[in-house]
Length: 561
Image 1: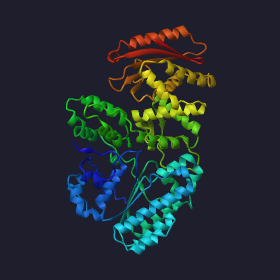
Image 2: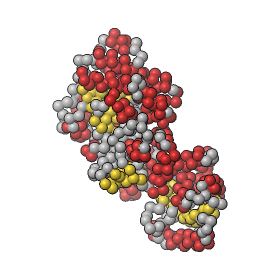
Image 3: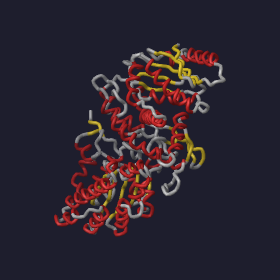
Image 4: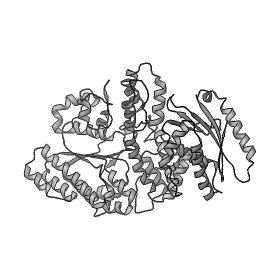
């Protein structure tokens, strides 16, 4: 079995070391047919953008010409090369990993360092005299560095590749709009850097450019300082340029898990991967929903091939940290309004809005601005189109759903001055082992706090969201939440991720207001559970414990059925 591409973004290493490579090189040909020289392509974090950028690097680099057959002989572009192959000198920038918490002076220094490192590497790679490199090393300002670099290389044909163009800028924006605008606005060091790039496109030195990132906010904020790029992120033709289509996932599994574990239940594996990692679409007319490629490869690489069992964790903690970090942008603009949008999304798994063409952070950050932001970040995706330009959005998959619930639980706790993070895992482990009392106590504490503060506005759907948000930290369960219509299914099902889980749970939730008849609501809830327990799908769940949860401003009563 070939090695799996996980945590690797160097195309040459992938090909030389016999990794399982999903061929994306047909998009090189498509990009050239666009007749656009300067392109930006945005996708959520961990979607495979960096590996594609590296593919472009080795395809177009003059210095890689001798390795062309080795690197591309079995790919689409190797069999159908374009006239531009190996015809440029490559300048490559990568702007991730700049720690913004240390202040703008530190960010400036690290940005300058990264720019200087790459331009001096270029000069060494293409055999420029040592004195030219020393000239660059004396310069501190990033715009001056790149300006002098283009003076030195004025006779070159350069293809510029920029990876994660906006990562550090987004992190700054999450902390301070003022600081963000100071580096991106007129006179800011980031804007000045991109203005020099723009000038180099006029002189002919900078002939092609391909930029990746997550959101268009930084690009839009550069305004006329960098208005030369074509954004192809929402183009139907490039819907699956990053990420995996269903066909690509099927192929990856056929060359790995299904090859090594011949008797495994293939439909079950496909169903679980689809539920966890699929669901994205970047153009309503596109044929394929897209999987997060990095997470699919994580699943395959961490699969227990000895026992033919799924990984112990379905979400890599590094990926979760990446998404949680970018969630800080949820507070951009009106944080209370944003929180209500997220709450609606969690309650209904649907919100309605438009995808904005551009941002202007000097204006009010609107509701559609926020919807466009979380769409770009991969926290929602298009469900369907209501009319031209107006969409229903939904949560794309289980990974994002769990991250939402985690965020919601922590944010509710923060807003109401109580903590849950330190002890929730211990509480859920006890629930797993059959001791429901600690979870009962925690839920009671939260519900009493929230309902007493908003007694008249608190409803059953709020009760359900709070319960789900606490349960979302239980990594050993799949959570089903009213997956079928007409209330012919329980409010919440906790189903163990494997057969070792000693207790599965069914929860039906009811909310009692002051004027409600408690006994009628209780009896209705108990009858519903009895009906659920007769469903074939419920009967098939082993070790199932069923509870009616009756909530009110006085707390929550747990009744086992």
